[in-house]
Amino acid sequence: MHTEPGVMRGLASIATALAHRADELTGELVTLYERELPHLVNDDENMVSLLSASVYQNIDTAFRIFQHGIDPERVEAPAAAVEYARRLAQRGTPVVDLIRAYYLGQTAVLDQALAEGARQISDPEELGLTMRHALTTTFAFIDRVTRQVVSAYEGERDRWLLNRSAVRAARVRALLDEDVVDVDASEVALGYRLRGHHVGMILWYPADAHPPDPLVGLETVAGRFVDGDEARALFVPRDELCAWVWLPLDGPAPPERSRIERVLTDSDADVRLAIGDPGAGLDGFRRTHRQALRVQALALAAGKACARALTFREVGAVALMTSDLNAARLWVEDTLGPLAADDEQHERLRETLRVFLAAGGSYTAAASRLTMHKNSVQYRVRKAEELVGRPVSDNRLDLELALNLCRWLGAGVLARS
Image (cartoon, rainbow, N blue to C red; front, side, top):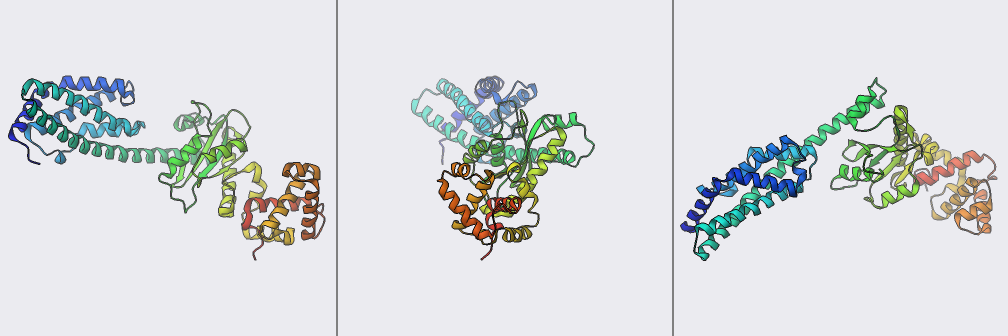
């Protein structure tokens, strides 16, 4: 758009006057950021110095645009501004704070420009045209620079997280491989207490899920299990869709099933979870993870029909039996006979029989757990016995294991039509 020569001269004059106050303006903006955006500084002298250099170079570049008629779309972000953005990424400062800083700074400098313009330009119409051009040019400059510094921020954040995750993963692998390790140094490096109680988890998305940022989503889920502001989960990405997690515990009690369900209810419906038994110290750190791995293998074998969350306490024995899923399926068929049919009617009979056996063979207790009439439980147990072909008291252990395999693996071990 064509701009009148008088407006360009006016802007150059205003920019020149403000350029003489660049140091003063820089100090004012740094003070503004310390008050409005304390995360940008965090009482770190080096960060304050780099912030000051970034602000000064941005101000100087903006004034030169007006003094020399430079196209703002051809301007590159100052070196100090790019480096400052990278440092913020390394510290985990939210990128929104960086973006907000640019627009707060734009507003503050335009206020100064308006005051200076009012001193230099007496004609209100000319002043209006001049400030309108100042606003559009400054916006173009800020838009271009913020895009460049945000790109630098995101690139550095990705590199930093990747490097940090690689170092953390190497340290964890050494712990799991039972290499000779310095526990004190490992605790410092990981930011996690190895001597306490913990429970191992594996969080993952199925291969056909397409979350926008999988690892961020999984880390958010892990964080929901942690109580208090001080405790932190140890989160180690395994690949782009899976992470190993250890949760610090106050004692040997595992997370309650009701809590697990609440966390999953508030999370992405595609997230899957395998949980080991709680353990203490370095040995417990290893054991609970290995248990979680077995549970995950069970869940992967079960496929989509499997529950979203499985714990070793619930399915440990079953998990140990499923290294050969085809053999497990044949064993279930041999043990349950026609009761292993994959349909809703037989599923109801299997569940009733499972609860009946878990209740110690008490019809009354089973009816209470199933919220059914005692006679209905008796009928279903009798029908199940007919299908199995023998009394449920015969080979009771095998029968319970087979029923639990059906419960957790579903179609993976049921008879194929």
